[in-house]
Length: 149
Image (tube, rainbow, N blue to C red; front, side):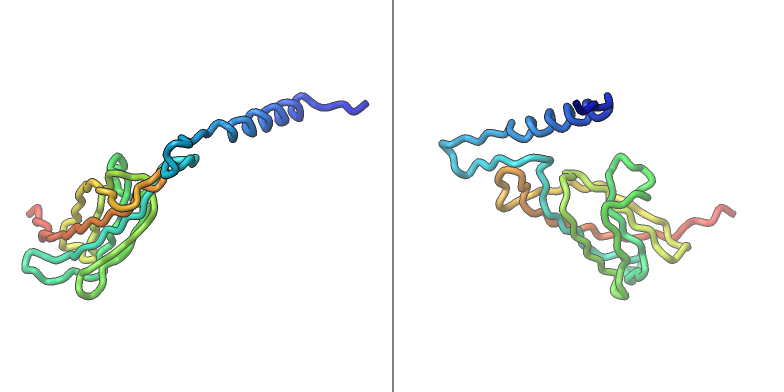
């Protein structure tokens, strides 16, 4: 007779319970467009724009990050990129976020960083787990830092 440890028995019980959860999804047979999927609905989104200074000159080398609006530092980014020589940027990702904070940190320390919270409006083929596609344009006009003298 084979003896099992308590941890082995618990592991097998957990595996059996998890396997049963896999059979809990049902779809509406009357509507073939209703999909039965697991997980969080996600969609594709693209955020693009330009960064300029108060004179309208492009700001190159600025760090652009898209993050959760509740992360006030903006340090933990979902996606990030750097502006090109013309001040433009573009970044894309899949996710379930409906609101995104876009943070702009210039390489030129004489300019103030800036951020904005945007709402993503997913459109397109939003069936079942797919939210569709969202595009958002976010332009920044960075101001000169004031001296504290």
